[in-house]
Length: 187
Image (tube, rainbow, N blue to C red; front, side):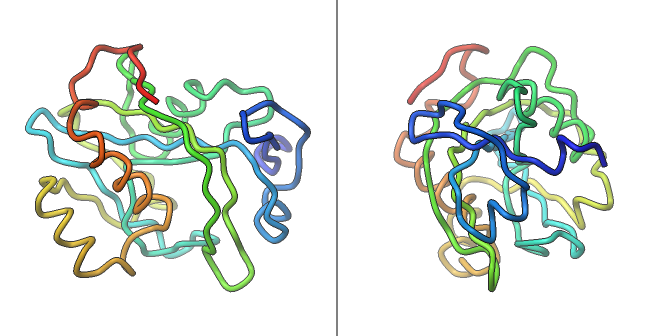
């Protein structure tokens, strides 16, 4: 693991960099840091979900969006999203990632770990089949929006905290995000 993979970029509530911190320390002593999340939809509008690998240091075995990560200090959000989607799910986004929205959240993700993140959310519409990395993903599936909403209603404990917030925010704006032009962003 490279040194910068152990660090997160600390930011203020406007995503202005204010320093760096060890990743685990930022989660043990909740400190606002930068994150990215990627939503992947197939051409039918189904959501690509994956179940986090059992070996993950938090939120293991929970269902979540296609991928998420912490950008390396100095790394652009979109570069981090492209990098992690390829590493985690084996999907190359090319030029098709779309910035949807940003939000700040804080959520307990383990007995002594808390996520406190400025999360930039991207989307991709693709029918490319995932080739997930086994250290990151135990299984994956596509779900229609209606089935996903029902599963989240019936079993919220099976989903990551950040994905529940992203899904809620996404559904407020409806499917206006899916199949939009690359580079067009909504906040």
